[in-house]
Length: 219
Image: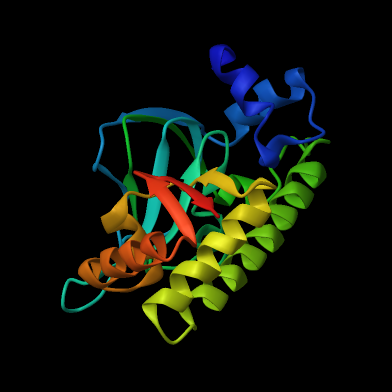
């Protein structure tokens, strides 16, 4: 596990924890590392929520698929961040979402029961770990609120512009990249792809935005 320490030290879950403690912690939490190809399912809807994932490289998408097969992207997660923590902390018997690798990815899986409950060793770093986990969960709640603001807009155009304005603010620039291709952006905004493409073309012709693939510019 030593070769992953440089990445793990940047992970929000391990802020304030020194390297020697981190090495011992990985043993306590039954850490394992897996390689996933693009589009491979990491966590499956309906399975018990037992693991918290850490992106060592690559990225994943957290998706929800309804009864009719319609796909909605709830979030995109890249290295060195974590996923699945909310469901694991709730100790859900069945995951309500699926996590899919968006590109070839190296992922560390941690047994959530070893995070939520202190081990017999009484490791001193455990309190810091739980604090970091709660802080990460609070941040994810704010991100979820931002998505609700976007998807609650009435029209495709309103959803698109609300999202792009939020991304520009996050980047601190009127030129920025988004983590989605066109179909994925439609899935995130919960709109039809053809309608989204029409809105993008309309905004480009009006001189409001410019874009090339996943790079956008607010004019």
